Image (cartoon, rainbow, N blue to C red; front, side, top):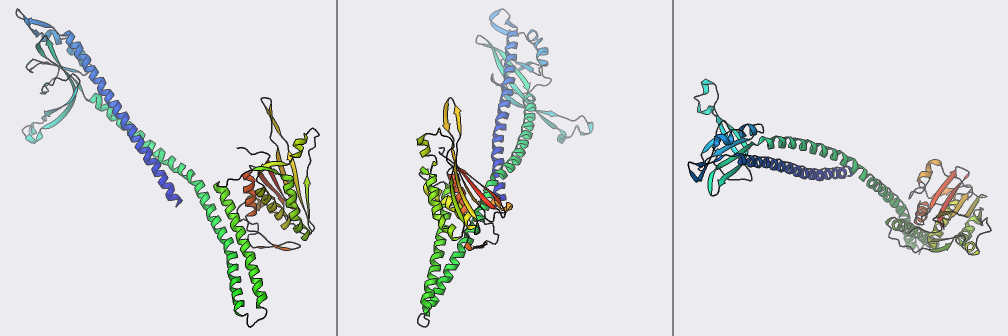
Amino acid sequence: MFQATRRRLAIWYTAVTAVLLLLFASGVYLYVRSTLIERIDDTLNHVVEIVERSLVIEPVNTDAEQFRINVEASFRDNAETVEDDHIDLEWFSPTGELIWSTLSEPLNIPIHGNRLGETVRVVKEAKPRDEETQNSALSTQHSALLLRQVTQRVEVGRQVLGYLRVSHPWFEVTKPSRQLIIDLALGTWFMVLSVAASGWFLSGKAMEPVGESYQRLKQFTADASHELRSPITLIQTNVQVALADLELAETEATTSLNYRQQLKVVERLTQRLGKLVNDLLFLARQDSGISKDVFSPCPLDALLMEVVEEQQLLAVEKEITLTLDLVDPSTSETSPELLENWFTLIGKWDQLVRLFINLIGNALQYTPSGGRVNVELVRLEGSNRVSKIRYSTAQLQIKVSDTGIGIPAEALPRLFDRFYRVDPARTHKTKNTATESTTGSGLGLAIALAIVEHHQGQIQVESNLGRGTSFTVTLPITLES
């Protein structure tokens, strides 16, 4: 699918570029061709002006009102001058009869008074020199000659003295035009090939994030289907068992108790399924950016106190020591107002509570009895001076450390992936040295990462297998708009 899309993109890139190059090449060709024609016409008109000025006009006999052109005196010098420029001259009488010409053979083209220039086609018949084929009518060869001509009528008063026609070979236009066509064709073909190669490369680069997103979507769909299938299957099984017990209510006395237990299992599985759907909805909203959360000042010290207090029951049950350390400022120059808001940041209370419940809950879950879980809150103060204006870059750093079983090094890069659990068997039972507890769906750390990024912060993890894990969350005091 992606290769077909990549081919289509490359073909579209190449096709559009080829059309643009063809339009550009056509424009260049027409411009150069018209420029060559204009130059030849200008040259012919210039020759006409020179020859007109050099014409020797004489009166006819004694009649001062009748004039004629002295052909010998007029064209004797001009013939040698124009020969070097491949220009031919023809002089016609007022009746259109050819009187003088630099051409070896007459063109037999009627006179058209056209000072702007015109292109004429002259067909010449040339018989072969072989005596055996001279008498054959089929042996006559025809050759075409293209000329660019300018014709000027020469007048004195109202008397027309004759017509001057100047001709120039058309190959002065066709020869460079053909060469230009060849150059443009080669250049266009080379550019099309280059664009095709570039289009294939760029389309591949453009498809890489799409392919990665598609693979993530496939993995997400497979994981979500797996996670949703398990509780739904269990709910269906328990409901079937409960209905079967209900049908035997008249014959067995213990059916009511079994029925109640099955309903409790269904309720627990339904809650688990609802939590999973809520987690997926939360991540989907964060990814799409449709979540419009209103941020407000949040005292993080009070928030952590509430979370630790809630988690303290689980810690006592598992015989784990859970502590909270608030690192006070070390300077005495801090103002009372700043001290009062020392651990306050701009954020969303509910999301931050969820973030630290996930982190502390994971630490308690994977720490054996007799272990320790420590939560430390410290403010990292920083400042910059720009144009004598001091502005704060303070951050709050929260470190959740435990002495639990640790995380393998190869699992750390994927730790925040959705539905990823270190246990490859994807079981919902995890045994440690003291208790057996159910794990989550693998979305807890993914949600934690989404919340941290939503607050423009960072989260890092360090772990030593068998010695413990430490999560470090760094959140800015104020958010950038």
